[in-house]
Amino acid sequence: QNVPMATAAPKVQVKDTYRVAFSQNASNNPWRLAETASMQAEAERLGYQLTVTDANNEQTKQIQDIRGLIAQRPDALFMAPITEQLGNVVAEAADAGIPVFLLDRDVDTSVAKRGEDYVTVIVSDFVQQGRRAAWAMAKATGGNATIIELEGTTGSSPAIDRKTGFHEAIGQCPGMRVVVSQSADFTRAEGQSVAETLLQSHADATAVYAHNDEMALGAISAIRAAGKVPGQDIKVVSIDGSRDALTAVDSGELFATVESNPRFGPRAFQALQRYAQEGQVPVQQILEDRLFDSSNAAEFIPEAY
Ligand code: AHR
Image (cartoon, rainbow, N blue to C red; front, side, top):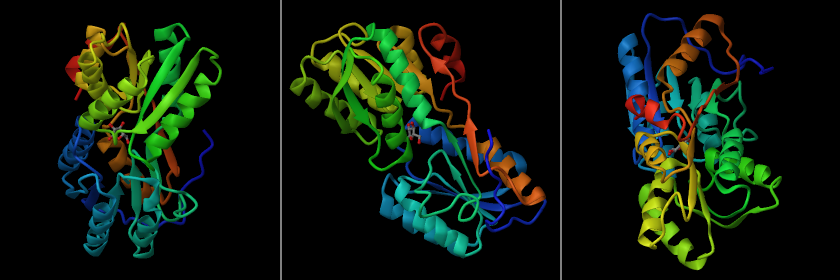
């Protein structure tokens, strides 16, 4: 990877300990809880003081949270931005001289510049996750599928990129088509209610692609409620790798889940330390993700979140 280094963002002084903040966008699913827990555990291990805010899945609250954290002048501000529209508030932090590290989601880079308005973004390759979900779907269905797509939070980088990658890949498969796409906001409850409606309006659907596990698990309940057998009548593929999803893969209700690793704590604080010491880090860091299917899901259940 030829990634430029962050050199123009606000600097971090080398210190024995840091006072840092993390703006989390929601705590409404196991993935988010695992991400927050990873940040807290690593801060505790290092003896850093960490303040965490939870935006309750509301963009306006996250903007308020971030402005409140800027006013506290932490040594560094970590953020998991709810949508790509948070570029302006990232730039506000930089203007206030606070180094920002984005975790798990990106912002619009035409508004906030990598390496200038924020030091780095540490993320999975969401486009590749979408492609891998499509390849798994092709395997599950033999390349013939009438697909319902449950999208994540509208305007979030994972929803945008997981859609792009999936559609790009199924474009290579003449027998696979998405007949309807709708947001279910990355939650199990909405996944279930949106899938219930879409399964009625698209009774010919043979597959569900969900942008995360929680929506897939909601869809599996909806499939059962519609009198169909998940994994047999309707194949389901998703992204994350939560414990409930791995259990569903093991039981055959979910065909596969592409990993999206929420454990950012160690990488986040390593990036902070390296930036303090060297004055520069790559402006983007991509996590390696695995694929969980019937061949390995059971093995990973004990370590899952
Ligand atoms: O940004 C990562 C996504 O956000 C995860 O897939 C999802 O579960 C979370 O809410």
